[in-house]
Image: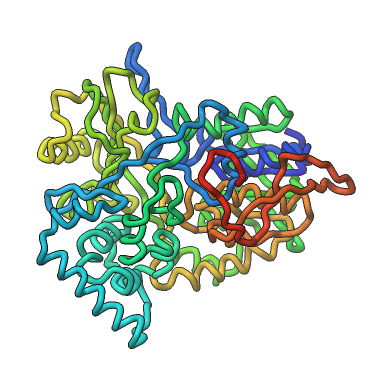
Length: 509
């Protein structure tokens, strides 16, 4: 590394890697620093070798669906035939019964019975009167889902599952969580999606019945980017992280790194970062104002504990993943990675990825691998998924700062922090951890591309627009300094809804 690095990217997750790749397309080289031993962040893929058997798993189920056609072409250019279309099968297990998701109306009616079904309908009518006609204010996630689904249906799956994720009552969770995760979805729209269902045409992201997935796990995207960056002269350096970031006159002027165990100081012209926003503030020198540091202390993160089981069985279930809203079941979701791609496990074997939502240093976080396995296998046997004797091996994985917690006061704290960070002219903070925004993989990719565009064009774009579902990319030119480089396949983001994406892979139509 040179002391004067023009573009330094801290964090090799989706946002950071997309930024570096987009810069390279425009002829701009960069240096990406990643703390772990490989890139991908929360979208990395683990590989476990058991003799001749190879098992792969992501950190939870990853599916790719976006209304931004450029992202499809972006990934397809990287993966080509290793970019697979996968039929989605997702279910919820509630009160001892499975419910398809997206909704299977006849199945739901059969499971619920006529009285419960009628009660759900009546509750929705009462909620519609309360919130839509009488104007009751929506102040929490609980209000939002009751207003859109009625109390009975909300309590059946959305409220209890959300409380399992966040570890707090839904009346203390901000409605932003619902707007971001289930925007446009209510009892009426969900019913319409069943009645007028057209494969590949569903515009509600949470209801899509197919998605795209890399052949060898979602980490293949970022491993491929890293390879192409190296071939193009950009650098990706793992096992390195910032220790101190100096600023002066509203600019980042110096970054002190732990560079593979050694101290390294560099002076970047631009800094793109996607580490947790609360951690990033701790690197800054001089320190941020007290009001900013106090705001950071008031932001909360939800962490996760994962157990990955390799299994001597060809298949466990037909689902990609299954949700468990019931609170007496300790885990929140399980995924069978072989149902994403057959290459995620040997032909005659399979695996299960089990997720626990926790706070750092709570009881489950501090459990040993053996304790988590015992808690897990007892429940899996009881539910009929897998027997103890069928488990080959199990692996424990823990991740901090996975989900930014949207409590009722988070917005004010976050705005205080963002107002301060936005004052730095050459800083771009992106991605889920970088912006404290629960976005999907596609949104993080968009943020990274927008960061690259900001550098290339010399102006800052609004990263909060990413994931607003009002974006598309159109053909244009890349401006690099005084030069204008035409690339026919290059598309810029325009904040306007064209609304003509037809779901075809990489078509841009």
